Length: 550
Image 1 (cartoon, rainbow, N blue to C red):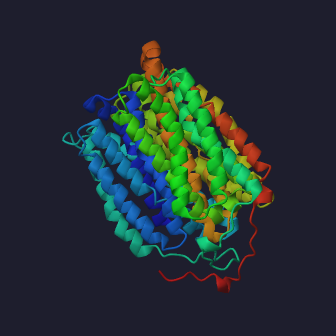
Image 2 (spheres, rainbow, N blue to C red):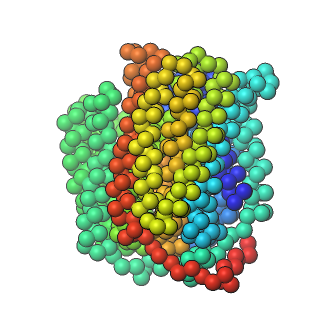
Image 3 (spheres, rainbow, N blue to C red):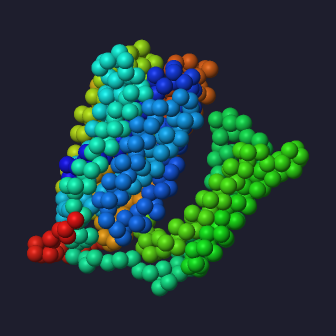
């Protein structure tokens, strides 16, 4: 548990150090808030989220400790490489590499912990593991500010900070593999170890689930065009297409998504399904980009070609996913609590990750603090408030959950409900001291969901599908939370800057805090279904709990 915690702390240290280094990076490389949002958001989240799914498929079948060791080496190496970047694109690609490495570092750990602890202790165990979030984030912020701010040596800068923490993670990797053993799957659940069924023997999705897949496909395939419309109308984004053409592309995308859902529910040949889903995903993109290309006579530019290739690849990946994860999805579609808790956690993560990234810049701009002062203040909030909130959330989840399963969603819902107004009060504080005092409470409450929700996910699926469940949760949570939250807050701040100047970031965070109310609503909704969706297991005798040798 100690080593799992340390690896998770390095996960967040390498991930969050850029939040404090954003201040000198912006000055050195001449970046905007929007570009910083891309570095802290989509650059990391895109492959971090999507690669976690195929890695989870392997983790349900092979030794999980090897996967985590390799992941630690990759993400730490790319963190060190970040210190060598000389422009935005180089740093962007280095952060993409960090995301690639970290894709295999979390979902396998959730299931290892579930196999180390009996059900009644899992929320606390996962809460202890999740302490890596505030501890790693705090040390990332403090270490980054001390190194880059001259607290250690005047010869060190933000590049040195990346290199030092990256190499430290590389040194931890062999120690982790040497000391952490692979536990026997499901040893505390009374369920024999089971390999997922062969693809050829798996049944197709029944009609009721096929309709759900078609509705989800319609939303997913239309989503790029809908987001483009949202960007144009709300953020003032400049799109080549008109809103009317984007709306047409969204309608075509919804139709293609419906067909894709029907096809997914019947086809079990992954190559055929991948090609078909890729073609269906490409069609609405051709509508959106083909009309401007024909009207202007200039053809497809490099940006359009890259976007179309991205859609085609995304469609192929969706098709492959629904073949290889057929057994998991057949079960997951019966569990509304799983999807509702994912949406609640994702809404909270959009604000949580966004605030973790932008609060250092907020303190520096709003209260004219130095880099070192900002590091100590924000690092202290993360360390003490975050740790307290996670531990209390885990303890409360296990304690109340013994009597009522709904508590695993109800406890986070209450925490989110209280967090929003306290964030508003903290952000509007007239002094840094008052802001730190007030923000202590919502920072703690905003992380209290981790123990209960992660524990609930381990009880919604049998042992051989737990890593798959965790990876799907991480896919949605991180794409929306890291990829969306960090970028949207930065984008909104950039738009508001001409009006509010240095106070634009304050307004952006105030607006983002409303997401905690959305998260609370999803969690209250999930609590209605949690007891029904829970997978009950008969505990094994102590003699059956032996851990397999590494």
